[in-house]
Length: 135
Image (cartoon, rainbow, N blue to C red):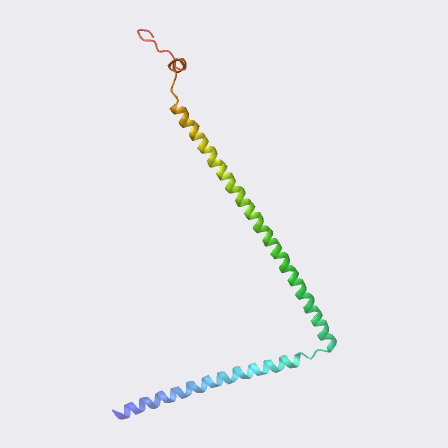
């Protein structure tokens, strides 16, 4: 029984050792690749002072252009906000006017319903009914 336990532990220890070796190899490869890329990057940047100056001028030009575009887009955004707010106010005013017109119509209709009807005028608007035979 003890041999089985010791054998199982030995097998696990051996497997863990292999996994550790594989992971260490992967890490070593990744570090080596990173170092190699860094060395190539440093070696590849052998620009002359004139080229460096040209690149800085180009970078400055690009930065200025980008800032100009950002300001332009901010201005457009602000103008759009103003237009949207004005349209919102116009729509609100239109809805208020529409509501007021509706209320005025309802009030007039209620007043018309409440007015006493003059029997003489009410009779004039109705057709005459004749009773009797042959009608």
